[in-house]
Image (tube, rainbow, N blue to C red):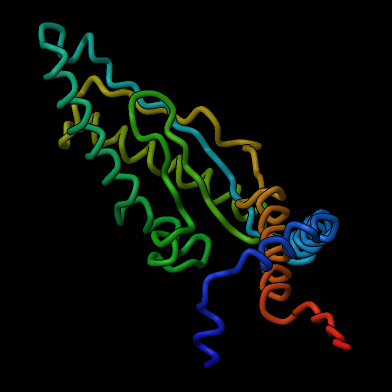
Length: 213
């Protein structure tokens, strides 16, 4: 009986009741957003820092006579190699003892690589401490650039025309990993969902008693 009541489709009266409570929904959205803001400032999300490394494949010099298709495969191949270097033991292994964070944790979300292509590669680090996040991102970017440049110079699997250099590692930007707007939206939506559930299943209108003579 209870399951039938919970999973029965809403009636027209239920929808009318929800629409009539529009003032409450407006107030509830504001209240939910305020709750989300309070949670954001009381228990803020981790910080995320970003360092940037410039990767130049020098296509014109590396493959001057090749077609666009061959250029594409060249970029894809060399990009995969550089991605492997960014997550290699040689690079990540230097950060683990330096910051006291296990390698598995660094690879499972603390360190994040974005935009791996020709141009700026963004190295993100997430941590509860903003200074730690900055140092992690900066060290990761510098370690990657050193390892990649060394392999290019020694012809260890990378094209000799590739250039890798750090362009942002000092005083790098640090922001919250989740913006305040996300907390506001979740708070407003969550509060409205709970109140809608309450209105539909627990707040039943009183029926009028009909008197017959």
